[in-house]
Image (tube, rainbow, N blue to C red; front, side, top):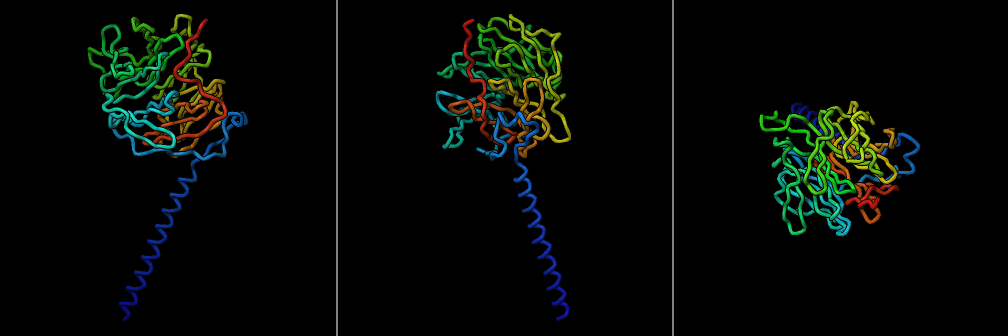
Length: 338
């Protein structure tokens, strides 16, 4: 009887302990969920975003060792978003109110996506180490796969200027270049007719996301390895004035996260990942706010919606959104007449 009593008490303590552990686990989960928030780092943020809103997770389950969810781009005429799941070499399609479906597979482990002036999809492909253009009928044109006869390393992200020229980053990957590869992690410009490719930035360790200022006078480029954003003045011929290379902002910190993909709104504010979340900065690099989404990395961002005031962003495994008060720069870019 005493033994049974001792056993009962032991079981009681075990049950209490288990209940406590479950309660603690539940508390941790609640704390993690509650940690999602929009931090106001400067009063100027109030004109850009409502910091009290809920950060919405739209879909999850993407990514892996090969690569994360990446490259979101809004297709305005179809009112849907495309993004890549690098791990499974799939292009995903998110339609508001309907969810996510597979739009294309395989994609050659594509990363960044954008559109040219004609609305054709431009893709940075990891597996084939090239940048491609896809026509509505599905036909593929190679935009770039080499520079001066040497193979590109692993194109990462891509944007298109209003004159039709294409800019992309080529940071490389886990393997060292061989004798047939380019040796520089760089940023390249391809002319609108695809006839000329130029290495325009060569002072970065890990060039990643890139974006233009609203008037296209400045090119911003993320250096993910150094966790910084740099800015360059653009010359009339589309290359950069290298002597203007300057630090826009340091995105490092104790928390995980690097500057990966990047976008700019019509007022010139810059949106990119960094330590602990997705940052909103003004054109001087001052951090105005941070979207703390609870994931270890913000991989890319895109504006969308009918008014371009929905901010979509990918983490390694998920697609998320918030709304903003200032519209993003539309994609495709509008061709300038002067």
